[in-house]
Every structure is written in C-alpha cells, then in structure tokens.
Amino acid sequence: MIKVWLGWAVLSAILGAALIVVSSIVLRNTPTPIATLFRGLGIIGISAVILASVYGPRNVIESIGANLWGLIALGVLSAGSILSFYTALKLAHDKASDEIVTAINYSSLVLVAALNIMVGRETFSLQTLIGISLIFVGLAILALR
Picture 1 (spheres, one colour):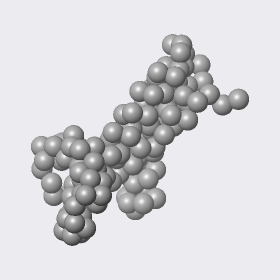
Picture 2 (picture 1 turned 60 degrees about the horizontal axis):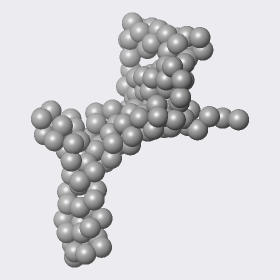
Picture 3 (picture 1 turned 135 degrees about the vertical axis):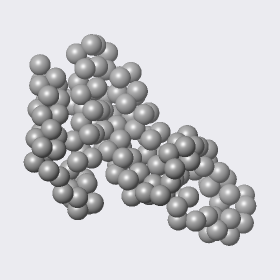
Picture 4 (picture 1 turned 120 degrees about the horizontal axis):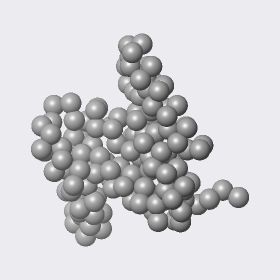
C-alpha cells in the first residue's frame, strides 16, 4: 500500500518545480521585490478573484492584465508546494520518512532542469548536466538508504 504522505511529497516537488519554471517565464522583467510581494499575496489575490466573480461585476476579472494572472498563479503554486511539503511531513511519522519527504521535495531542482529542457527549450552545458545528474543521484541515495 502506498503511503499517503508520499503523494503529498511528490506533489510538493512538482508544484515547486512548476513554480520555478513559471517564474522564469512570467518574471523576466519584474524586479525581485515586486515578484516576492505577489508570491506572498497569491492566496489573497486568488481569494479576491473568487469574491469578485461571486459578488462583483465580471468586468473586474476581465480587466486584470495577463501579467497579474501569472503573478497570482505563482502565489498559488508557491502556497501549494509549501502546503504539500508540510502535509507530507505531518503524515510521515518517523525520521526516515521525513528524510524521504525532504529528498523528494529537493528533487524539484531536477524537475526544473527537465521541464526547462522540454518546455523552455533551454540547452545546458555538459558541466550543468553532470551537476544535475549528481543532485539526482544524491537524492536517490538519500531516499533509498
């Protein structure tokens, strides 16, 4: 039987990777403090959108620019990643499981590289690919010990 916390740990890694990839696309020309502000306000922003759609005129939602939607998406991905990680830690009741959750969470670095190659069409130097491979091998060793 698959442990429930394992699913949460994998979801945390996937959402963390998605956050980094989407950030690199959306935030190309956005200063870091502004990006940080919007990540922090992601949950509030999505709540405001829901409230505006329920109680306010629909043109409020339509008037929001595409970049703002991207910034709100970053906040949601960030919150989802963090909540998934801590849910996995809460459900994993021993130290060995905590270590596996942490290793899976850090695998988001490897997922970012893979997604950037597939989606972003980025190319990496041999040195970078070796580094990513070593991170993956190190995480696998931690998870399997």
